[in-house]
Amino acid sequence: MEETILISYLNDFIFCPVSIYFHKLYGTVEKSVYQTTKQSSGTNAHKTIDQKLYSDKKTILQGIDVFCSEFNIVGKIDTFDTETGILTERKNKIAKIYDGYVFQLYAQYYALIEMGYEVKRIRFHSIKDNKNYEIKLPKEDKEMDNKFRKLIKDIHDFDIHTFKAQNIEKCKNLF
Image 1 (cartoon, rainbow, N blue to C red):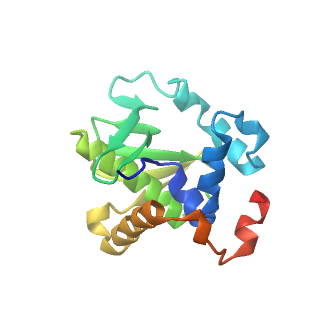
Image 2: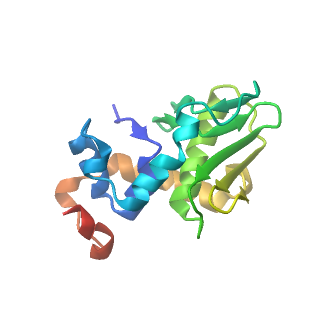
Image 3: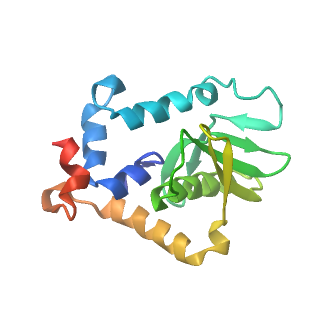
């Protein structure tokens, strides 16, 4: 059986595939020991969500666990408004929307759909500058959806013993 993939690993794997190995190796070690400054900022940005303090509106699901059996992925969503059908992933500061960000949102989308929710729109929210960035749903962007599916396959097929870094700069902080 294929190993379950954490949604947060999707962007990390694109950045440097062996980072997933190190995440697993560190296990329950305090994150501050190995997280970069940017990763720590991202963790801090999610505190209100994790503590369910973002909203007291009953239609806003915040920080709930989600699972998608189709892709064998698990994680948490930031916010989902059951009334409007808007799924929002919050980032500390968005300078550029990377594919890995979109794939994390796709994973959350597919999990919510599988769980019976109707997701009408997906977007990012940049906390520092209070901007929203709408993203096409997977069914509206077949190219990105195919790249998402390939990423899931690549993660499942990854073998650290045969890994050769294509861009050593991306992985250099891991060694």
